[in-house]
Image (cartoon, rainbow, N blue to C red; front, side, top):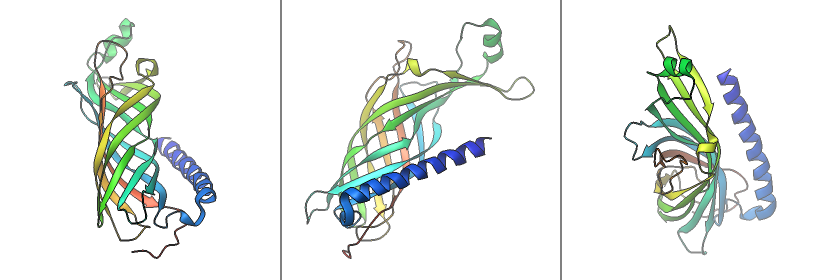
Length: 235
């Protein structure tokens, strides 16, 4: 069932990608992926954790979205680098469970483990400076929270038990922080797949209850694959 759901999500996002591509091509035409404007698919692995919560561990996630680069001047090697993480989770794992006010439930999960997954649509807005095939980038990353769930898990009853609790009301709608990292373009020219690593450092307390001061952080390992036109022979 999980494999079917994952496949459906991927197909949906690729369908959305195709529609977005047609819109971008219609707007920018031959300029797209020709040296001045770059557009494509951005995805990979990220590991998130909460800053300043010592009883938590990192959470492994996959993310998928789009990137959009705009060259500032004709002879510049600097770009505005932006986009959106359409499928992106933050949160943490390995935390102790908490009481939900049901004595039987609390007794079952008392020695269990808590994992929190918060779905956030992040929009990185960075300056990207290219040094040959290598590039550095840094800036800000606002985010809009969508869903949030706590997963209670315990293995002490002849198998794994899991309970999923909707906790979106415990988290602020907006997140904000700093983001930056480095990458490598696999070939010269305006149309090139690139790989890289970025780090997000949240500066906003995203947890509404006063029990914890939670700030998100995440390490992204990504690949950016251009899609669209591409007509320049520029090296």
